[in-house]
Length: 233
Ligand code: ADE
Image 1 (cartoon, rainbow, N blue to C red):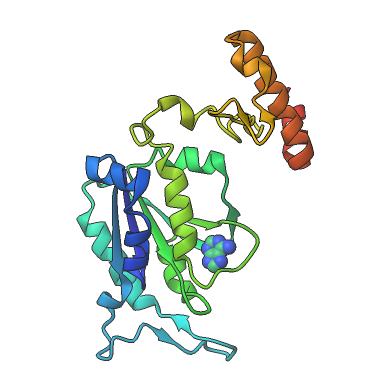
Image 2 (cartoon, rainbow, N blue to C red):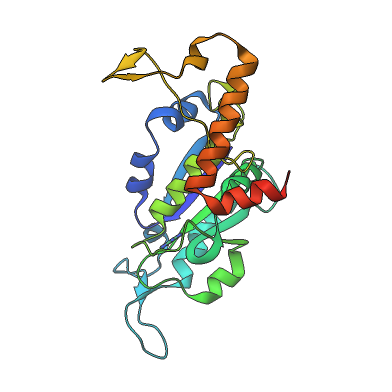
C-alpha cells in the first residue's frame, strides 16, 4: 500500500513513520510512504504558499495553486488509472475509527492532505478531496500528526505489516469490546499475582475469563462502547 502525503513539513512525517513496525514494513516493501513538499510547487518567486483570507479574519490560508500542483505531481506518479481517495485531515471531518482504518487498508494508494495556518482555500478542496476526516474533537496546529495517526492505524490493518496475523484482529474495538488485561513473567510482582486461570493451561476457561474481563472493562471504561456491544448481541 502506498501513502502519499501533501504537506509543508515532509521531514516531520517521514521521520515520524520510519521506525518500528511501520519502518520495517517500508523496508520490506509492504508499505511505501512518500511526503511531498507543497512549497516545492508554488509558482511564487519567494516560495510563498499562504495569503490573507478574502472577507478578513484572523490568520492566513494556504493557497489553492501549490496544493493542486503538488496533487497533480502525485497523480502523475501513480501506477494505476483509478482515482485514489484524497483525505483532508481536518477537525471538520468525520471522526476516524477502527472500522475506517480497516476499510482504508484495502486501498492501493491513499493521498493525505495536511493543512496549516487557518486552513486551505475551499476551491482546491472541492476539486480534489474525497474524504474529510478528523482524529477527534480537539484542534491541532496542523494536519501532520493527524495524518500520522491515521497512517499508523491503517498500516497495521494491511496484510503482512504485523508479524502475528492474529493480533490485528483480536484486539480492542474489533468486536466493540476493549481488550482484556495481559500479564507476563514473573508470576508475582510487588505482591501482585497473575490470575490463577492464566497459569492453568485450560484454554476454554482462559477464553471465558478473558471475555468476562473484556466485558467488565468496556462497561466501566467505555459505557458508550458497551451499549453498542449489547445492541449487537
Ligand atoms: N488538524 C487540526 N486538528 C485536527 C484534528 N483534530 N483532526 C484532523 N486534522 C486536524
